[in-house]
Image (tube, rainbow, N blue to C red):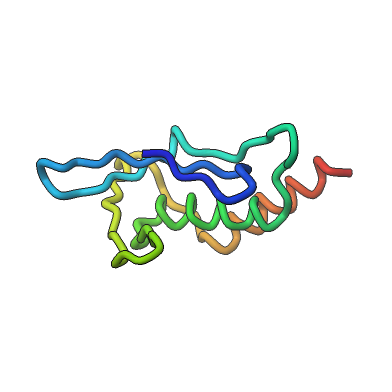
Length: 102
């Protein structure tokens, strides 16, 4: 399942595991997007990398679909990944994005 923000500048990928009743995040298939009308802005970068680094840090990820109960997403992180402080990592990503915009 692919989810996009309203401006189509962020995409998050999930795998629905109906057999086991789970949703798995797919960070490697998720990302920031550019299209003919919109480019990512600071708010997009901040939102995307907040989810990214919180998932890496094994935080709870919930999908909110209008009119539905929140859905918890299972996060499986390989053992060779050492999570960073999400707040610091997000700020670094935003700073790098802002430098690219200059």
